Image (tube, helix red, strand yellow):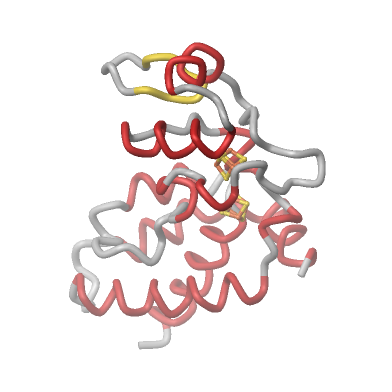
Length: 165
Ligand code: SF4
Ligand code: SF4
């Protein structure tokens, strides 16, 4: 499974052109058809790539938290919401609460997550390649290609399938 991470490290720079081709407005595939392929390939990607060999999302992207998640995580850690906010959160430019450190303060040395059972939804559903609206999220997926092997795998496999349609 580390082979896929190696392949991503070697080739991700060529993927921009692949995603442009997939997202091309002139492609024969409808948004729904594209979503179905993306969903299928995401499932396969998770069978082939172990996120514990990577954790790049926890090491490179800021994580935002919803108010109900802040309460839940603070209670899981056994501290007050106020303490949690002062120890771990800052406001980003549009006023959303985000974790104050990158890499994430809850990332363990072995790439596991200290708060896995109650991790924010943005973490559990990352990198969103199986989410409805693959075409609409195209630029987001494009950005993620530089650090997410799952996104790289999904885009590469979609490219192969769409070329052969
Ligand atoms: S979701 Fe992507 S970036 Fe995050 S750990 Fe898995 S492969 Fe790595
Ligand atoms: S909360 Fe857990 S899953 Fe989310 S970024 Fe931090 S270490 Fe990663």
